[in-house]
Image 1 (spheres, rainbow, N blue to C red):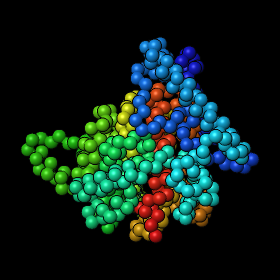
Image 2 (cartoon, rainbow, N blue to C red; image 1 turned 180 degrees about the vertical axis):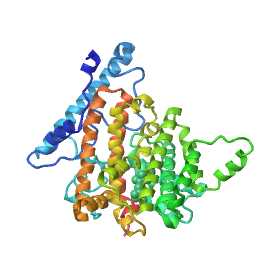
Image 3 (cartoon, protein in one colour; image 1 turned 45 degrees about the vertical axis):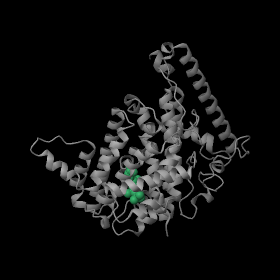
Image 4 (cartoon, protein in one colour; image 1 turned 135 degrees about the horizontal axis):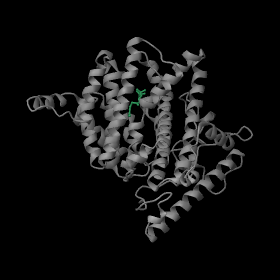
Length: 444
Ligand SMILES: CC(C)=CCC/C(C)=C(/C)COP(=O)(O)OP(=O)(O)O
């Protein structure tokens, strides 16, 4: 065994994660709330800069003296924060009031509910059990509204959701961006990420989900193939290129995807753009998979569905945490298997939140709809209520595992990785908060 492999934190696995989570969360039957900050990190207010130069294990010798001191301070602060979070968690688990700091859920001023994790008060009338999830880190309604206004204006310009822009405005995707990316207060960066998200949503609504918007299962593959070329341009021979370009502009979803990526490219490095392209291509595979179930009239099993929700997920949005935050996580770190495992688990959890909150909307739609509770009810032969509870438990396990594994990675990783993992955690909180309030899922 090399020295490096001995001093590097071991890979946390399900069993380790479960053990730690169980120790921290189940003390005398009391569940704890998810902490506001990912253990091992500190919430980073918008505009805070990262230390520069090489960081992390084995690189300290390469740092110049000042950078070294700064890195050490940051590491110490992260360790302190982790200790504090663990202490707080233990106090909460023991049923003691947490000294000093305000209640994290109340402090956000968003929910009005005493605590944002699982428990009776969390559903705000939606029927969704309270979930183990961090609270949203900030709520800045004015910023959310600015992003939303600009997003709706852009949707109008590119032609998506024609005649339905009032519903898009009400869904408030600008608020989602504001809640999910608390380390940026730049409306234009939030808008760029919002455009990408709305274009991905439009792809789903127009091609997969919504027959009233023209979706037809037999055309899905062809539509998605063309849509992908909006993100990764086709370079056709000269005689075909002009007409191809006209055709690209004929479809509002293609226009939206291309325009969103163009805007994002002002802030993203090529490797970050490539990352988004990859995640969207994977998302499209997920859209296809769902289309295949639909055309067969087949309900997938729970394992297949969960694997699907990892690819048909919010990962393309979550993957932009660094672009929106104004820093770049190197491609090699993003691709590191332990990082990918943690981040994809978070993405699945975020998407299960969508499943839980969108059940009512989907229940009202005409076609076959897939979500985890329906799939569990079918496979386990249980009631939908029981299946909702089981879905919430699966969500919670994923979040606990992310928390444990990401915290371990944060303690040994670079400042960029630490910030990214904290950004993913913040994304989970903003996402849940948005789903709980957006009229897309909560209208009568
Ligand atoms: C990346 C992105 C914004 C994708 C949107 C599609 C997606 C992964 C969802 C979670 C939406 O799933 P669903 O079709 O259930 O969405 P709605 O419930 O209709 O919002």
